[in-house]
Amino acid sequence: MIPSVLPTYTRAPLTFVKGEGSWLIEADGTRYLDLGAGIAVNCLGHAHPDLVKAVTDQAAALWHVSNLYHIPQQQALADKLVDATFADSVFFTNSGTEACELAVKMARKYFHDKGQPDRTQIITFEGAFHGRSSAAIAAAGSEKMTKGFGPLLPGFTNLPFGDHEALQAAVSDQTCAIMIEPIQGEGGIRTVPDQCLKGLRDLCDEHGILLILDEVQCGVGRTGKLFAHEWAGITPDIMMVAKGIGGGFPLGAVLATEDAASGMTAGTHGSTYGGNPLGCAVGCAVMDHVADPAFLDQVNRTAGLLRQKLEGLVANHPDIFESVRGSGLMLGLKCKAPNADVVAAGYANHVITVPAADNVVRLLPALNITDSDIAQAIDRLDKAAASLKQVA
Ligand SMILES: *Cc1c(COP(=O)(O)O)cnc(C)c1O
Image (tube, rainbow, N blue to C red; front, side, top):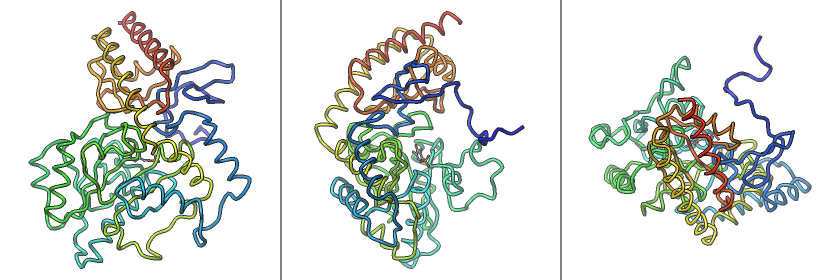
């Protein structure tokens, strides 16, 4: 009999009832050190007092009004994002998938309105993850996500990761955009080197193509800059944001330059819930922390500490781990043992990590994780690795 919750997930046998900072707590009081943060969502940890206050104050005042009216919290969050980034304008969504939908629509509308309606092709990359809608699965192109869901939305060219010649060959007068994650999350913490991001920007400029960055997972302070592309010294035309921006409240956004957004006039797009007062009140509170240079300095310092300890962990367990990859607090352990076994051994030792493709275990802790929590995390990961060795 089908479960009452549609069984699209393979769930771990864990049920949390409470969160405190970097800790998740079961009903019997068992505490787990959370290095997953809801897959890079709970960027300020669980139950951060400023976020709790933002959501409860707003809940007492006004939950929802239609986008038929002005929403001050939405205006305030848009202003903060425009002030802090390349963007001139922001549309709010409830998720990363919806941000992907708008990014695709915006890029196509741009060329339609410039009198190039056939310029609809979007280049994407193998291993990408842009969400689960029809457009997003067509964009990512992997059989795992698309099989059985055809016909797929046309207009995407999926290229091998890091193949410069394939990229040069794929660009045509039909290409409207290149869409890429600066660091692939689901794909296994695979980083696009700064040099390659610069090369992509140049290629786009040369051919008049829009560069769409998917910073849903790597953005919002995760790499130690507010957005990951800042490390490469480039800017996109369109950027997808979600996950961390709501700190746990469902919130996403598309950020764009004035030029890239020029086709999106009144009536061309909308969302009932996107940009609602509750989500935007929380988003403002998140931004007040993560856009602060002192906060980002701290993320970089913490990231250095975690990385150094992970290198030690890998060196101590060469039969379990191969290497550390990623940047900032978006780190991956490339495993020799099956990554699912490593994650399960983590559960047994009360530390939470997240599997990814390419046999990688992801570490995406709260950006404000403490040094003592990092020490405990490494201790638990060390025990988890040792337990796998005994079995082997
Ligand atoms: C999670 C994710 C998405 C999809 O976001 P949802 O909020 O789950 O719809 C898109 N792109 C990237 C890079 C992601 O990590």
